[in-house]
Length: 223
Ligand SMILES: *Cc1c(COP(=O)(O)O)cnc(C)c1O
Image 1 (cartoon, rainbow, N blue to C red):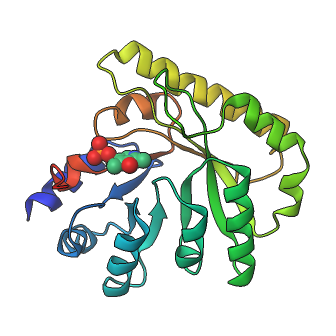
Image 2 (cartoon, rainbow, N blue to C red):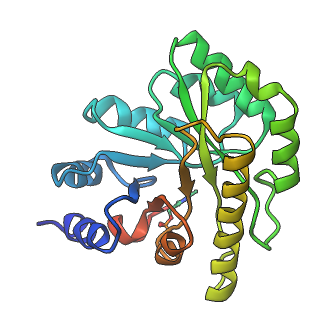
Image 3 (tube, rainbow, N blue to C red):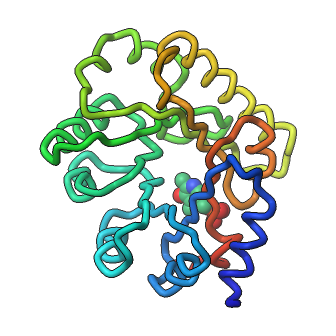
C-alpha cells in the first residue's frame, strides 16, 4: 500500500459511514488520485478550474468531481458539463450563471450555499441574512436547473476548539432553519459540507455530512 492509500484508509476509518469524504486533490498530481481511486475513492475535490480540466481529461470517467474553491462566473461554462457538486456558491449572480450553463448542458447541477460563519474577515460567503433575503426573493424559483443541496462553510483558522465548534454549530442551526423554512419537502437539501484536515472531527460532531480533506490524505501540498 502506498502512503496515500494508508492515509486514505485511516481517514475513512475515522469517519462515520454516512459522512461523505471529499478527497481534496488540488495541487497533487493525477498519479496520487489514481492511488486513492485504486482503493475505491470516487469523490475528489479541486479548487482551480484549469487544473481540474486537465485532470478530468486523463482520469477515469466515474470520478465524481466536486468544485470546492471560489468559482469565478466566467469559468462556470468549463465545468458545467460534468461537475457533480459545486460547494462554495457565494452570490446570486454565480447561482444564475450556473443555472444558465446547466440549462445549456441539459443537466441539473447541485450546489451548496457558502455561508460566512467564521469570525475572520473573508470576502466570501453569504451572511445568514443575505441567504434568507435570497431565499425570500423568489429568484430561486427561476433556477430550474439547480438543486440547492445544502450549505458549506469554513471555520476560523484557529487552535481554539471551542470557537471552531461554535461556528460549525451555528452553521448547523442555520441549516435546520432553512430546512424547515424553505426546503421542508426537498429531499435533496441535506448536505452540510464542513471540516478539513485540522477540524473535520469537530465538524462531524457538529452536523457535518461531507468533509473536505486534503493534506491528511495526500500530504503537504507543494504550491
Ligand atoms: C484546500 C481546501 C480544503 C482541504 O484542506 P486540508 O487542510 O488540506 O484538508 C478544504 N476545503 C477547501 C475549500 C479548500 O480550499
